Length: 286
Image (cartoon, rainbow, N blue to C red; front, side, top):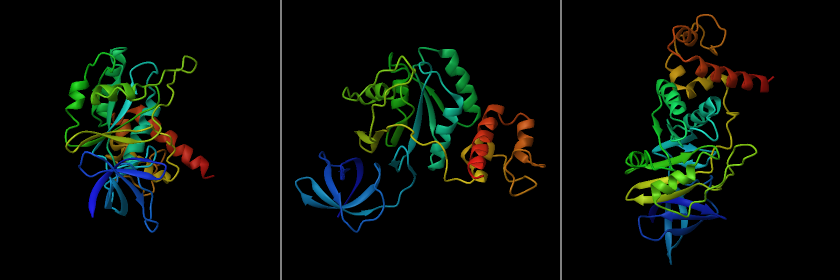
């Protein structure tokens, strides 16, 4: 029996890194339950000729369903400083998706050479919300070495909306020129999706990066409205002292979150995101 990490899956085959040069192509036993994600740690039986059978999936530390990836040490949400322009509500929802999966992400602005003032405004905003913010330019190479230094001995996932230059950035980081880079649509100013499956790339011993296809679900449809605040650390810090245990932090009297908002401890735009999402959940349940 040997243990390895799923690097990619394709047509029912799972390619597992056991620390050797060659990946092991594995199939799952029929009795094995549960969906296997890229990043999962597996116990496998080697059959020879770099082939194997999956015996067991080890317990996950964390996972994100869409993009589907597991056991991440850190995650970067990639946003473009310009072309396409940043959208604060969308960024909030992507960060919340990571929190939903048990991962406190970092925020990285690519194309920072295009609009420095814009990214500085966003850095101040999200730093105050409790997130580490980084600037890079895949075009000029600015910030790439500093970002690469954060990856050592970790499994790091990169995800973001189309058109933000994620594949170009990863090409710089990994030194690979075969990553697909899509053009930006002139009509709608959005990029064409180029990454279709999450795939792990090994940079060195215990150092991996994960190129994901982006966020395809940002609705939080499985969560009750009262749990949404837990996905926003800057708001969640002020919960637990409301007059009512069922408080949704909107119009209820004695709300500690609203008190923090009024005191200037919570940024109004972040609170507005919270209210929009809670209201949408409540409206769907009517």
